[in-house]
Image (tube, rainbow, N blue to C red; front, side, top):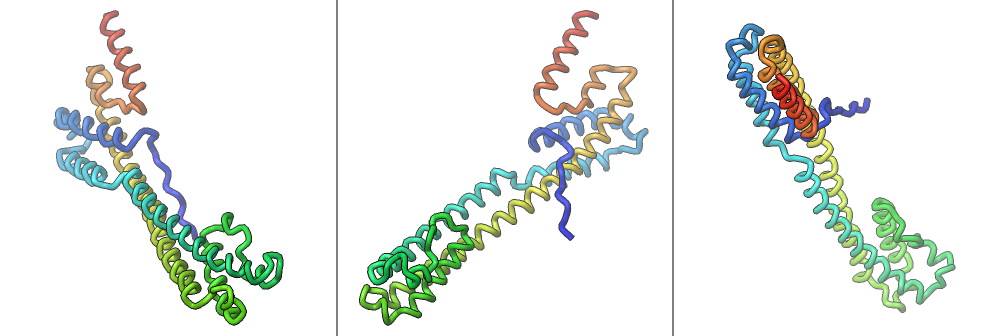
Length: 235
């Protein structure tokens, strides 16, 4: 059964999550005597901080995407080399047979530019195979084992580059899933810590209560700050 995708529980950047966690941990250390009344002590804060640091050390999506892009560029270069090797054969085949003939069509190179990676790889292998089958007929237009071998080598290089690229795509998916899972763990702990902090200060200290408010964006923080300033001026 296919594994269900992991969804993020928070809608702000991972960097913001990390910073918010560190800030709330500092506040909780300040208020640790009160937090102990909720069975939330220094050991749990230390464990929370350790999870934050492990999260920080995970490669972000730009990093793994960059690796994927490098392998994609190499795959595309190998693709063009394969197409060039195929065209070199087909130019010679066209000299021997009409491009409307069955012998030409047997190579299956029509609309090569529109082929998927898998179709192109199969096409290259087919061109090499059919060329060898018709070598006696094509020798007079310069098709020989060296020309065919260039196609075979280009196929192998393209397949290798394609496999590496697909591995990087899979690695990126895994990295995104791992980061999402660990981010959700941090967010759940952040919510728990902030709920305790707000409960502690709800009726006695508005400023400290606000210390434990989770902001979804920088704009939320600006709005809250303006509201606090307005409340201070009116009091």
